[in-house]
Length: 333
Image 1 (tube, rainbow, N blue to C red):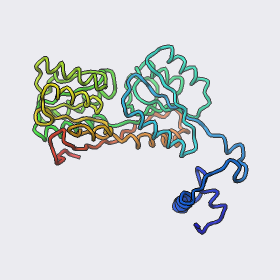
Image 2 (cartoon, rainbow, N blue to C red; image 1 turned 90 degrees about the vertical axis):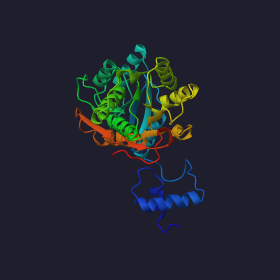
Image 3 (cartoon, one colour; image 1 turned 120 degrees about the horizontal axis):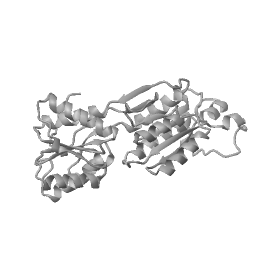
């Protein structure tokens, strides 16, 4: 059907196939259309060495539970599978005994690398890097308090804040509240930096009472905005993350404040739920799929350089919808 040899088809049906991509795609499409399903006893026996797949430890830090971890994990697992590696997911919460167990497991592990997703207290993160110096911090912008060289790959969160704040300023908003996470979190530090820089650049006063700390959850966002309204703090816009924006929109609705007429809202993450809110949420899109693929590529392709430090930042983009009250994107790219 494809005009190629049986051997070429056999090779094309295997992972990491040496067959030319266009030819392999044609063979896969033909196999799918014919209803081909692999059987255990089909083909020549695999050599033992070809069955051995190296594993990668993916540590999911559970100090916070943002919704985007699912998309990031899927991206990492799919990219590892595509490269013929196994993905071993390990979780680590705030429990100290659990952290000690994780460190002991990593000491005795037989994996070829480690990816650490998300936020950990700096003391735990340093201990983890001591145990697994090959680890790459994913969705992390680093921390100056870490004493050993490390690799990190994350988003330019400061630029995400600049995109959002410039957009709100262009829409005529001047009292922009920043609803962020815990003060020690790298995302919190980064977005505050971009927020302050952008307001100073526009000669707009930074109002400290409009910088609100919470826990990255919808309930936390709702709570601090409700308190700000009770305290009579005046604001005409909010920049936050997508999950907290869900709770903030509900709070504004309960206080009979219209979005975007009275208060414009811009999120950050690009979660799918933003398109289903009323009004639809303007958001800064963070490319999670690309982040997962690049993390795997960096781990596998640079594994011969132990102890090398590197920082990679992915550039976000602004997705304008109804919640910011602007139909045409006027921000600087």
